[in-house]
Every structure is written in structure tokens, then in C-alpha cells.
Amino acid sequence: MGARLGAIAYRIIPGRRKIALENLRRAFPDSTEADRDGIARGAFRNYGITFIELLWAPNLTGASFDRLISAEHKHLINDLHAKGRGLVILSAHFGNWELTALSLTHLSGLPLSVIVQAQNNELADRIISAHRSLFGNTIIPRGVGIRGILKTLDQGGIVFLAADQSGPKEGVFVQFFGRLVATPQGPAVFALRGRVPILMAFLLRTQAGTYEMFLEPVPMDDLEGNTDANVAELTQRHAAILEREIRAHPDQWLWMHRRWKNTRDASTEHVPAPEVAR
Image (cartoon, rainbow, N blue to C red; front, side, top):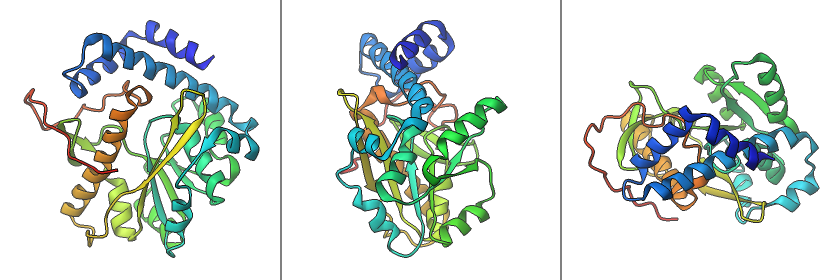
């Protein structure tokens, strides 16, 4: 049902289809139009499936998660949290982003404080927030003061958020798919000021309809203090990890938002992405 819904959306929402194809031309300038069209169609299907699965979330049980999700490195969540301070878990609109936080709570047994953007429709916002807060998770509206987030981290809490959409013009600019693009600096600021690690987490869909949980810490032991340079460097590091995984699974990212809305690279030259070992 979700795949059909996404396929219909690709045909009847030309504005978002156009944005997706424009983004793909920026990201994959050497690909053919047919290849980019195939990725865009896949991204719409993935969005439809993700939406339907979010509506189905209240029916999920521990046994459901055990059957649907494999996580080779699930110990990383508890290992990092056990260091005695909080943890920032950074995700993206990638794979099934709506079930990622719920899956992490199931895998670790630890509740998350999930930072989300409120929906414009009040009824839809209440329904979606109720589904997102299953299994003990707490919803934090985006825009809440940094002091409250740092207090959560200082008390050993886990803050979960996505930071793959466009950042403000006055924010930090990092290289992403070959261009310097404004990127939210919140995750880096939270981690550096709270002196807590960042763990990247994506729930990637398999061809069998199950999921693999991707978990990878962002290297930051060499960064001391919440300086502008360290914020930029840490933001670049997590953006590079995300880019690497999107390149591996391009049809699972949400290409339909204006990710390159604020950029400082006015040329058309495509700059190679920084190397990030996995």
C-alpha cells in the first residue's frame, strides 16, 4: 500500500518531483536522466512505505521488532551510554526514519528524547506524536532552548534528532555531495558543549522488506571545546558519513526537500566528497 501511495505521489505532485530530480542532478551530475528518475521514484515509494508503517506502529511488539530488524552493532548504544553521560543519536530522513527511534529504544531498553518538527495540522501532529512516543520515548518540539537539551544530556539522557535538511544562512557550511551547503549545527553543539558522543543511526530497508540498523560513532576524541572550528569540523564529519551511506542506498533518502537551498558554492564544478572510512 505504501509503495503504491508513493508511486501515485510521484505522478500527481509535480513540484516535489521537480525538486527531487533537481537535487539528484546536483548530487549525481554524471548519472543519466533515467538513473536519476529511477532513484526519485524509489525515494517516493520509500516515503509512502514509511508513512504507512508509522500508522501501523502501535501494532508493533517486541517480537515484531525482533523479526523485522537486525542490528549487528546494537551494543554501541548501551556501551556509549554507559560511559556515564548522555548521548546524541543523529539520524536522517533516510530508510525508515519514523521507526528508527522506536527501534533503538527496543534494541537498547533506553528511552529517547526525540526532537521533532511539529506538523502544521494539529490533529495530524497529535496522532504522529503519539506514535513517535511509543515505548517510553519523549517528544521535544524543535526550537526548544539548548539549555533544556543540555540538561537532558547532563542527566544521562539520550537525545535523538535528524539534521539532514537545510540549515540557516547564518549557520555552518560543510561539504555535502560536492558543494558547501548550510547544515544544522545543533548536533555538534550539543555534543561538544555536553561533552557527549554522537552515534549515527539509520534504519535501512532491505529487499526482503526487513530492516538493518546502521550504527556508527562520529569520531570526536580529538576535538576539545565548543569552538566554531570544532563545530564545523564535527558537522562535516557526520555529514560525510551520511553522504557515504546515501550514495550506497540513494533511493532511501528524502530527495524531495530543498537540501541545497542555502549554498556558498556558486560554481557548477562538482567537488569530490571527503573520504570517510567505514
